Length: 476
RNA sequence: CGGGGCGUGGCGCAGUCCGGUAGCGCAUCGGUUUUGGGAACCGAGGGCCGUAGGUUCGAAUCCUAUCGCCCCGACCA
Picture 1 (cartoon, rainbow, N blue to C red):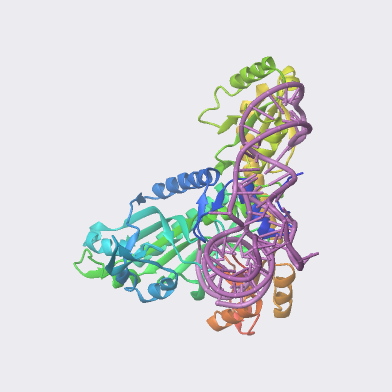
Picture 2 (cartoon, rainbow, N blue to C red):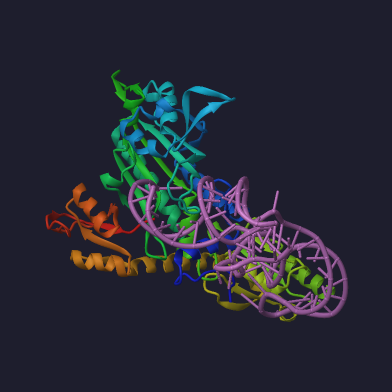
């Protein structure tokens, strides 16, 4: 029925790209690894930004903007940071036709510029905490790219906070992790596992990295957001000290955290189907599309009049659009909006008009039900809630049904290969074991869940004792 | 960086083996009839065949070089 979209079962990767193309979310740019975010894709990002920005502000954060170009020497100030990012930095060596005295790095992340400024802004405990977020683009010279999931340039938000105590830093790190989890689950309808990363997976320069991990429909994991407790690493690298109440000079405690346009990739791979994009109502740039179906001009004006009166008080409550274009036929329009993932479609033709009803079609289930025009204004908001909830539950059930506990290494290897999914296993906590796991299975430790119950067991590789299970999976 | 594939109207492709001056589908433009799941018919516009050399009377096609892109792996949000 749907032309131009490869089935998920045939080629998942192709399907993903087809969904993006048919929904007009993004296009390849002239430069390899870069993408153009088209209006349909950007509209989703704007919805995400709006909600996240609100949540950050409610938690006391403010927005600022720091520059794109960073002196190369700044990147070298924190040892782990430079080691982690140097290989993927793009560097500006010339300006105005002249070679620069010092090359400028195009930010891959902004810790270093921001901390160079925090040094000037922080003197006293009274200056703390600093809770700043910025919406920005960053560039990382990736070897291999995929639309939304990994592009050379991407859009994100990066929060950078400074605190007087390690406790406050830790509290902030977890507060943000929780905001990310709430956003992913309540708005994206994308269930996530939240917890701490292993040392191997930790952000370059962080003391501890926390993350949310989601399962895509091919049962691979997607790291959807990270929140880092930076300890005093950056404060020491940039010499940022403050005087406490007792007059002692101390280094400040820091966090940084971010989510990116990768979330759009996660949204697509969590909910979309073989007919194209499916967007959860809370992030849909358009929640309801109304398609009048007419033959004569008289019918058209009668329908539009009725639709006007039905939707008269929708503005500000429901994001809707009446598709009354006369150069496209109804069937074409149905298909067009379906591919774009609009949650609800209302069809109204002369027959419906005579019965004072509309045909309502859910994008997520494809279910069609006639609905009286008298009830529709009341029913739609409730239905949008229902769709949002159903989408989350469907995704959660899918993940839970593909999450297993395994204690036998041979079985684990076999199942990772044949069926994929998330596996909760015992691990001895050692880096070398983790490396071996990755080499032999291609899977990585995604997260050590904060609320994982204590359970004594044996490491699945080494047989050494373990106190709790960790989640492993193949990832994007 | 390894493996695979591909560069031909806006998009998707055929033509390449076996050289003879470019074609199909979709899209676009005009017209008529249509309109409850991607409309039909008639007509029209649009391409130095990725680039640069070479062979030849003649190259999309053969040879050489080169550039680029996509997909799969290793690294990463």
